[in-house]
Length: 240
Image 1 (tube, rainbow, N blue to C red):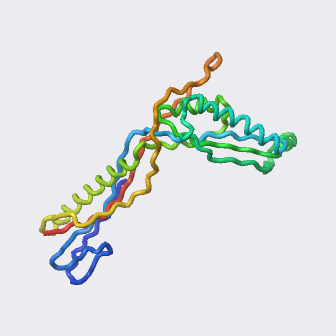
Image 2: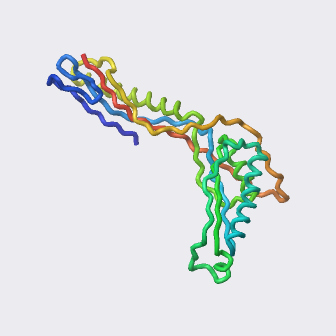
Image 3: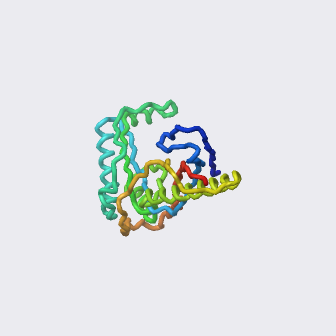
């Protein structure tokens, strides 16, 4: 639920200052309003977390098996024409396995060591399902939540800020009318919004996956989420 907090500040004592150096006195009456709003947009970017995790009885075998499959996966990315700058190593781990009491004696023997690699792969939203599909075919056995976003989140935040400011003005105008006066000019405004991550320019490329053997496997379908941006605006308006 959208929320907003309205605060009226009609101060008549002289010599007081806002923290933003806005002077408030008998000649400078103001209304201060805090309002928030949000906007949504269709997802344009998908950040996929894809990984490979394996066990082995020795440290060397765990490491080299992981490297072998990881090489297959990254080769599949590059063969699909995904730019290298859009592939980022996330996790790289080699350690002795913490034994699960539910494992059999044979499983404990074969799982002395564990290795893991994972990547963040940034592609256009329309490519996401095809890239996941080719990664799994190449050996990936770990997938995490998809991060959906737009190519220019700063512009989306700007729209959210404009919407919040419009709401603040509407609320301030109603407050001014309730006081029997008219709303004047905007004196000060600030916007609180999370820092937006900028994404590299996405080039739409055809993802080439190896033809599956008959019968064809089930086809993965992803449904991109709407991307939401929130903003909170603190605005001070003069009143006549």
